Amino acid sequence: MTNPNQNRAISRRTLLRGAGAVMSLPWLESIVAGAPATAGDKLTEPPLRAAFLFMPNGVRPDYWTPPGDGEDFAITPHLKPVEHLKNDFLLVENLWHQNTVGRNGHWPKVPAWLSGGFVERTTGGDLDAGGTSIDQVLARHIGHETPLPSLELGLDPPRTGIDTAGGGFPRALGSFLSWADPHSPVPKEIVPQLAFDRLFRNRKARVVSSVDPKHPSLVDSLQRDDTSVLDLVREQAQDLRRKGSRDDQARLDEYFESVRAVERRLEVAMKPQRRWINEGKFPLDRPTAGVPEQHIEHKRLMLDIMLLAFWTDSTRVATFMFGDAQSSQDYSFLPGVKANWHGISHHRDIEAQRVQYEKIINWNMEQLAYLLDKMKSLKEGNSTLLDNSMVLFGCSLKCGNRHDPENLPILLAGRGKGALRPGRRVRAAAKTPMCNLLLTLANKMGWQENSFGDSTGTISNLG
Image (cartoon, rainbow, N blue to C red; front, side):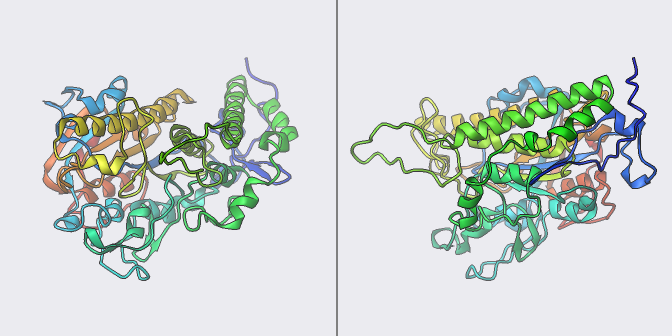
């Protein structure tokens, strides 16, 4: 049954506004049915999104690379958390960045992961990452179509100084994944509340949390009016809901509840917790203001915020760092693990240490599964958010113990609106530039150039 109000035009650019709040909308069929006259406002189908998720410290190669070919490939231990999503991702193999060969194990590999550039050794004040990252290329190409050209998220504050033990590279190189140009890293947001505000309250705010974690604006932000963004736009939201079809009303209810759920989790995560008084030398310093104490809550909040950014079409390009180049996140919260991520990655093939390393990787794969499951659950017409996305997940080195630069672990999830045919293992020729894959994805996003970085062509058998 058609809603009698459905023929009332709802523009794609309709924003719910309140005092200090602005909300974009998820894809709604009523926006198509009542599209405004301006062609630029029409969105006749869900948009295509691209996410780039970086995991540091490599993998155990034999626990990642499966036996079998094409659609008939086995599920290895590292892939076990995403086994139920086997038909929703591709394994793309034999990719590398030649410009990272023979260099430091970690720091210069991170900016090269999305650019392919040759990273220079500098004194730290004159960073040179060798190229512009593909997400920023896309942000310049399609960013004008959304409130945010791109969204950069992470967990770790930036490092300073020179890593004299690792080749003399500035640690800042491994702190940023996105680069506007070879000399300009794009700051990532690491505080969930500020990332959330960036979507719904203050999109133009300068990101400071990953540049100066002690910046006074962080404290100010966390003490700001904590009124729910939904309360600020309540009247407009109710009016919009009346105009929508029944399917749109259900979709809006789901969307508003998702926003409210994230707000509730932010509120709980930021509350001071009662703690035991620790004796001895066990370190348990209070985390940086505004960051949840629980690592899993921090990571999942940021993943959810990225998902909301895509679902509302606030942006179509996002990056997320699971950790910086040498993430030393303590994983002792996992059973059987008593180490930090980077330290245990140098396991030297000692079985007890290798087992801990494997558990850390598998846990991070569970977080990837968490994101993909949520994307798959969000309906967009006859498709899902995951169907309408390309999610590139991987590392800038293969083996955490040896820092191999070849055959990088790469998983590509989603269907790219029909441009990708998942459920397969795709083997490129040995030592194929990863920039070939980046160029291929950029082409599918509408950037029709013939080269990027050190690319030699595109990868034709992804679809």
